[in-house]
Image (tube, rainbow, N blue to C red; front, side, top):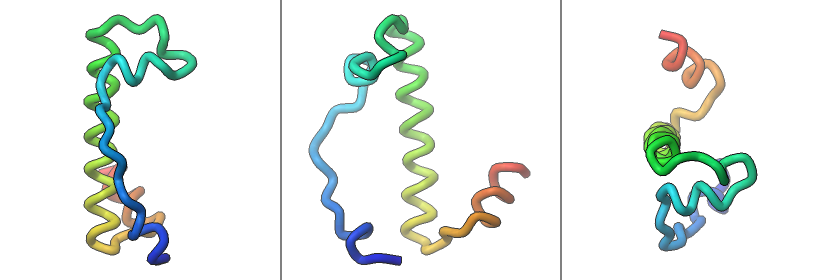
Length: 68
């Protein structure tokens, strides 16, 4: 894995319904629906981070965990 990918610094950002609604296609979402999407995105980010930290990045491991 490339050190450039691991070495990226996270910007201090707030990910909430207001942030999500700035993207095309999400402008008309209700606050409640936007919050649900943000929560799902945060859960996905946690899964990706866990895989990266464990060095467990390959298609078969990701797909097998998703499909089970």
